[in-house]
Length: 502
Image 1: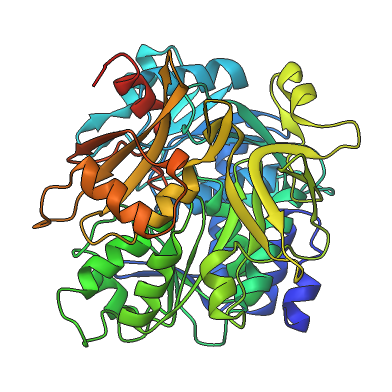
Image 2: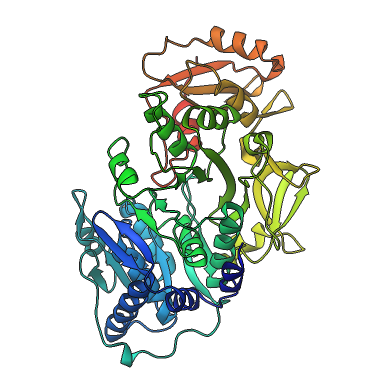
């Protein structure tokens, strides 16, 4: 991290960070979208006027404001306006509907709710009214506006809970995760420290800004003073023209994004997909080593993958200067200030980027050990070089006849099979074995039909122990995924196949 970024990382609050960046480089672009460009100075000015408009409506420090908005310039402005006021904001993924939104509004006791109106054919305003939401207002093209002279001083400290995020939905029950400005700044600093953006870089936010990765990425932009291209709706190949037009050099999001870029690259081998692209980066889901090697070999870019979660937006991140082996097989190293402890194989965390707990105090008590380390539920180990290797989930360990089997080990091997586009390995209840190993496969277009015999023969040849071999194979058109970072929802697969026998 350069001296300027290091100095800015000490900002007390997110508003303090924006204010410092705006004073330092007011004319530099911060946000790009279509033909629009907003500088850091303009972002600060517009956010302050929006804060004044919200203040006129009754939003005060500590007021809980929910917002369910797509990734737009206005969304970032509104979020910083709430940060200027010291309100408590609870972002909601725009694809969520009555069940998830109603739960979040009730649990957070939101007093205001910002929605986009009708977006992608769905009437969010009507849903809000149907749910009995308070203080509903639309914030798409138009934002509240007022005179900043009415505003009280900005918040002086960043250690109070001002953010309520919601677990991403890889399990069936969401939890309200409590964050502070400082925990989000610490997470974004970790990302920036690892990626070390360069002068002239252009980033991209192709995932929902309401995801914990939104402020994570925005902190990096503020620390280094470079812009990001925003995508309200992301799809390939449609988005490629925008990447090329704006000269994006840093892209990514998660493993699913890497795969999508690679698929497009394979349509024109040898012709660089995005001429300015030098780095793919992301996290949020396991990365098979074979995918890393295919991306770097065929796309001619560096790929750095990290480890984060709603509770801790950035834990480790691959370093562009790491060895190919470290980048392919590990999640990178933690930054200074992030403590990682392995207890009975489980990864536990303590540091400034760790959340303050959950809305439910019982869940908070269960999540932290007696020394204040967060129990992640992830299994892993630290190498001699300090790199973290994730080996699975506590709940993703299949226990077959008393033997523990890592689903991730099987998935990583199967991902290299040419007839496998994506795979999820799950354990299913079985009277004789306790659990049996089931592989659910999404095949690439044109691939020959996969059989269980072919899968087990391949895995045997790769040296997988016999007791770990899948005993059941399901081939699906598409694996069920979350709408944010496109993680596979294994609980849905368990629900689908647990009641069927083959």
